[in-house]
Amino acid sequence: MNQTEKKQQAILKTTFHLLNEKEIKDITIEEIAELAEVSKVTIFKYYQNKNHLMNLVIMKAFESMSKEAGDIIHSDLNFEETYQTIIDMELRQVQRYSSIFQKNFMTQYSENPEFSDETSLNTQMALYFDLFEKGQKEGKIAADLTRDDFFFITSIFVEGMKGIDVDTLFKRTPLISRFYINGFA
Image (cartoon, rainbow, N blue to C red; front, side):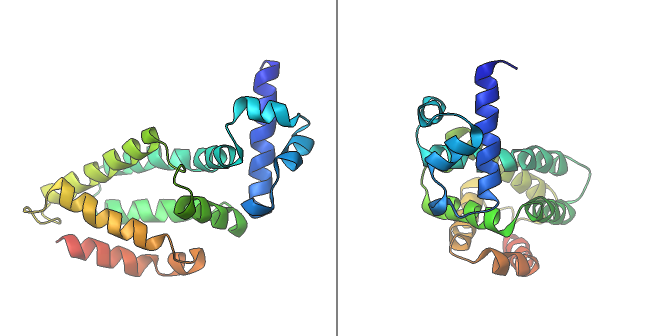
């Protein structure tokens, strides 16, 4: 690993550590630089601003979820088992992080328009559409619903969940899942 890569890794690891301990508003670039043993200039050399760095670190933490969700969708599980397995996987993954990290994730997700880049949004949409097609093939999603309908309803769910407290959201996941699945039948 060259010097540049070492500096970038130190910045990312330090930021991840801080995101598990403090709210984003309480984390400063000065603190990251000091703990990562780099200058502020070095941080801004690699990252546009604090939000860009926060978003990148949070998204990297959840990157593997997309791959795992894709593997689940393309497995031999039926639609309902697939959906429930994805929800269970997501809950397990999220529980690996501190409640502060989860709050930071929800804050960035709901308040920062630059949180998801085009690539991650396209990946997420492709997974939603694969799940949609699986559900339609099995007759679990009404045949008269289009991809646009599915996207519209999914968007309403996603937008509606942005304002909900993380703990409440996790406690109510089975209810949300049941309502979501049954609503498409």
